Image (cartoon, rainbow, N blue to C red; front, top):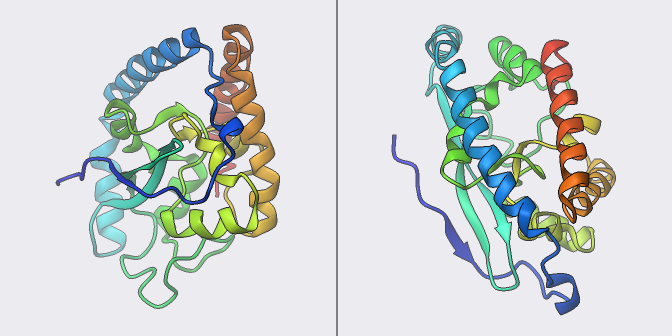
Length: 230
């Protein structure tokens, strides 16, 4: 399966130059990428035995590809936003958006298969994103990557929305995700963006970043262990 390389496109909105200044501590930049490479590599090796089992379960329940790819927005700067193909195990019917178009998933969404519901609750559907992390398109921890069409709409509705990924790779998990879960409404996004900025501010120093990273990892493990995903 071919994965497209990251692309760039015009800025989503005009930005205040003040908001474009880098704020992440240089040590955190290096340490975070090192943790991503070592962590994603180790997790991918450990999870590989699950891949054929998950693939078989998906194919037995519904026709269609095992892996699902979707264009998402990555890091942003003053001149461009990175686009990349995010990988996931398919958790919905293959024709999920043929009628509805691009919409957020909701609770009790009838497009989600039975296997997909289990994968979402345990977050196992996101295991293929470890490949995105190794490719440098995502991080283990960071803001949730959003679709370009949604980003344009949300940037119009929520001031400084796109700044949540300013200089940061989006994450498989994150402070907003473990505290609130998936987005269903515009109000959910408004609430979650505060968590995203809180995480970003923690990256101003190595110590505060380590504390925040540990909190996210611990809560992610709890979500997976108790099936609190959606």
